[in-house]
Length: 525
Image (tube, rainbow, N blue to C red; front, side):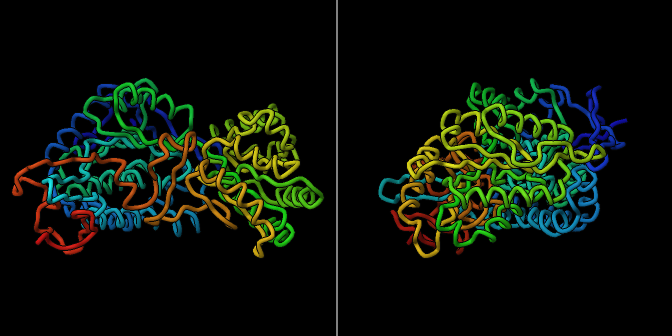
C-alpha cells in the first residue's frame, strides 16, 4: 500500500496504480514507503477542489491567510525533529547545521514573514487617484500549482517553501506537486499544513498534495483552465516543457531553471587577497556538494602566472577535500553528463572527473579550465550547467577578451566581481560591470554568491535561462507575493463596494498606500 494523497481536505488512497520509492543517497538503498503517481483525473480533481476553495476565500482579509501561515509555522516547529530526520534520510543533507539550524528556521521564518505581509497589506500596492476616481490593487488570481526542487527539501518544499508561502499570503489555494527525491518530508509538511488549515477554518481544498504525475499530466496541470499560476524550480528541460504548455493556455508560470553564476577575479584583487580567495571560492563551490542554484559554476580571470598559481591552488584544495554526497542517483548521472559536455565543448580537467565512492551517490570534486578564446568560440557549450561539486575557470587573454566573455554570457541569477580594495581594478571594473549588470539578477562585489537572504530587497531571479521572466523574484517578501496576484483596477466604483484597502478609511494604520502620487499611511481626508 502506498502513502495517501491530500485531496479536497481529506487524506485518502490515490486512484493511481503506479508507485515509486525515494532512495537514501548515502547508501544507494531504496526507502521502504511507496508513494503514488497520481493519474490525470486525480490532478483535475485537486484543481477543481482548489477552485472551489478560492471561491470561498475570495475577498477574505489578509488576516485570515496570516493566521493559517502562522499556525502552520508553529506546527512545523513542533514537528522539527521528525521533519529534519526524514529530510536527512531522503537527501543525505546533514542534520546540523544545514537542516536543523539553517534550512528549517528559514522555512518557518518565510512563512511568518509572508503572514506579516498578508496581514499588513502593503504588498498589494493599493493606489488611489482621487481626481479620476480610479483605484487599483493587486489581488489573488486563483489556485496556484507549486513544483518544488530537489536541493532544498525544506525551504523550497512545494507545500512549505517560499513559493507556497507567497501564493498563500497573496490569497490563493495551493496544489503542491511534491518532488520525488523527498516525498516523506513533503508528506510530513502536508500533515502540518492540513492541521493548520483545519485549525484556522480554511475551506477544504485550500492546501493539497500529490507526489508525482506523468510528464504529460504535469503539462495539463499547469495549463488547467481553472489554475491561476504555477511556481516551478527545477531543471531547464522539464521547466521549458511546462512553460510551453502554460504559455499555450495563457497561464502565468514562474520558473527557476539554471545558472552558472559567474565570478570575476580581477588582477589587483587576486594579488591582494590570493589566499583568502582560494579559501572563499573552495568553500562556496563545494558547500553542499555544489548543489545550490547560486553555486559559482564559472570563474573568469585574466591569464597570467598569478592566475595559473590560483588555478593550481584551488585544484589542490579540491583534490584534498572529501567529495560530498549528491542528492540522488539522477543528480549524479546528470552531473557526470554535464562534466562530459563541458569537456566536449573544449574544457580540460585540472582535477577530479572520476568516481569517488561507489557506496553512495557522489563524484569527485572536479575543476576544469579553458582559455578565453576557446570559450568565445563555443560560449553555449561552455555554459552548460554541471549541477554539483565542480567549476570551470576561464582564463582570458586580455581585458578586451574579459569584456567579450561577459557579453557572451547567458542570463544568470548572480554575478560577482572581486577587485582591489584600493581601486587598482576600477577602470576594468567599470568596463565589465555595466555588461554583467544586464546578465544577472543580483550583482555582488567581493562576496561569493552562495546564500540567498530572505530580505525585502533580495532578487532571486534573473534573465533567461536563470528564470522564465527577469521581472520577478522567488525570494524576498513582499515582492515574491506579486507573482501570484493580478492587478485589479476599479474605475468609478462606489466607495462601499471597493476592497477595504481602497476605501477612504484605511483598514489599518500600518497600511501604506499611494494616494495621488504620495506614499502614505492613514485615511484619505
